[in-house]
Image 1: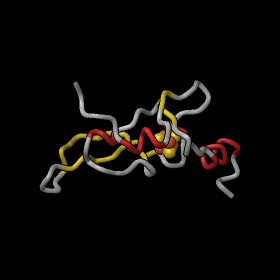
Image 2: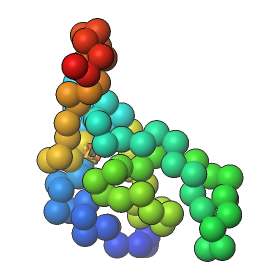
Image 3: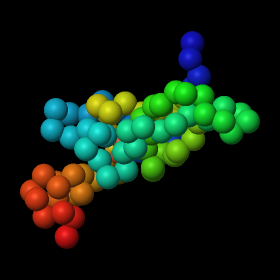
Length: 87
Ligand code: SF4
């Protein structure tokens, strides 16, 4: 058995995304979070994280680029896609 699911993920209804909407398109997505060891040095491991769920080192904070939650917001992604640069 793995560690219990992070409460924040349950509260945000974190789940598998759809083909049109998923974490890697979300404003809060961090694709390359440098996981640190207890002494604060880099572990050399890079994993996805979410600014809402938390930028923590524990693997319980790892998210899937294909996931989604109730805080999903892809307005910046859409601005880039539509070429208006977030204005
Ligand atoms: S806010 Fe939700 S949809 Fe956006 S990256 Fe975080 S977990 Fe994914």
